[in-house]
Image (cartoon, rainbow, N blue to C red; front, side, top):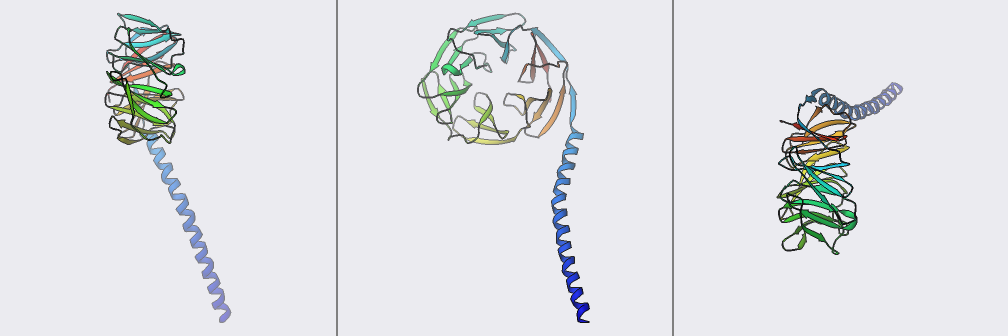
Length: 284
């Protein structure tokens, strides 16, 4: 009788251990199944939208940089900056001797050129006449973005801080603490700067230094964002729209197969291929 009781207790202990192991196993597997079903449901619910081109223009240039609200395109061949449309064209030749890093023309009244290797910002008017040139020994610029007609955002590599420069006062002020994550993409509007860090986190900062976390964006090869609810990105040769407020992804089916660059602004997607820029109207 005692032997039977001992065996029963041993079996009971084994059953408890077995039960614990099963519970632990299922508790580990269930989240994986939840993630799997969530991933599958997202893939099944993803839509592919076929968009139709509305206009195209010949663009025999090396680089397509930007476009403005009036659908002028900004391209370059070496040190020559070209502003083009179907009807008009202007050219600005830089004499700085440095390599052009960026052109941003979200405000068509002031076009910002950035030369990182010379730590220089050049501001042009609508006809590509130089208005102002900014250089400083107080910072080491990593990137700049327009803020308004008289200001631009900048990132100082020495302090790892975001700042704002006033063109009229020729003065700057830092707005943030040192950034802990590397910034890999930026865009701006009149009141805010947006950036995506190496963790694919989308953030914004206003002119008072208030920083907001806006969520994560998908992994991308290239991306274009104008501060609206939607951004356009490419991944392995496919274009997608992403609504960061709703975490909604939609694939875009376009006629171009070898895309060199693209720009998205106010519902217009401009795609640059070899010697041509094509516009698409996107409605969300």
